[in-house]
Image 1 (tube, rainbow, N blue to C red):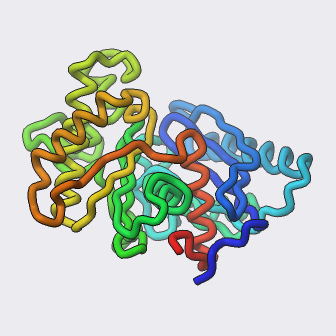
Image 2 (image 1 turned 180 degrees about the vertical axis):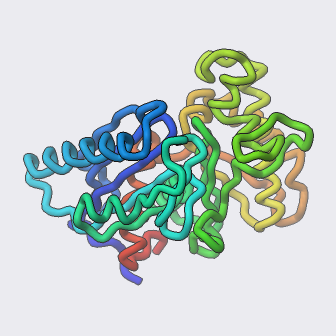
Length: 301
C-alpha cells in the first residue's frame, strides 16, 4: 500500500469525555488548522452533536480562508466502546451518547467518506505514523486522561478485534478487589488511574494530586503495560493524555519500575514506557491517520 499523499487533507475529529476537537491535517501529518471546545456536560445526544457540528463548520471555514484545498475524507477518534467502524458509539465518559449512530450522522453532516475508530487506537496509529513509535512494528499506544484507553500495533498492523475495540487496556484488572468501574467490573485500570477515578478517590482534580497519588497511578499503568507486554510480545508503550503527561517524570519513573518488576520473560524483559511524541495535536493527527487508513493508505510503511 502507498503512503498518504502529502498534499491530501483530512478533516480530523477527536471526541472525548472532557473535550471535542476538529482540525485539518495533511498527508505529512501537519496540523494545518484546528479548534477545540469542552464536551458539554450533561448534554443530550442531539445537543452534543450540534455542538460538534458547529465546531466542524468553523474549522472548515477557517481552512477555506487560508486556501486549504479539500478535505477529501473525514477521520474520527471517539471514546469507546463502539460497534464496528463507529456505526454505534456508547462512550463510557459521554453519557449523552448511548448507541449513537456517529459514523452515519457525521458522514451526512460533512458529506465526505467518514471513518471512525476508538480514540486511543487513533492515537496509537498517529504515534506510529509521526510520533514516538515511528518505525516500530510492535507497540502499545495509551491515553491516560479522563478515561484510559489503548491501541495495539503488532507486525505493523493495528489490531481491531471483533467489533473494533481491541486494545481497551483501561479495562484490564490491576487491583482484583479494587474500586468499582463505570463498566460494571472492579479494579479496572480506568477505575484506579484515570482522571475521573483520581478525582473521585481524592476529592480534587488530578492536576492537584500529591506525590503518593502520582506514584500509585504510574504503578497501576506500569502493571497493565507489563501484562500486555507479557501477553503480546511487544517492548514499547507510548503514553499520552492529560493525566500521564501532566504528572510527568515521576509518573513515568513509577510506571517503568513496575514494568521492570513484572515483565520478566525473555521477550518482555526490557519493555519501556515513554511519553507520546505528538503532544497537543496527537489526537487529531491520529484521527487523520484513521481517515487515511480507511482509504487504504499505509501509515506504517
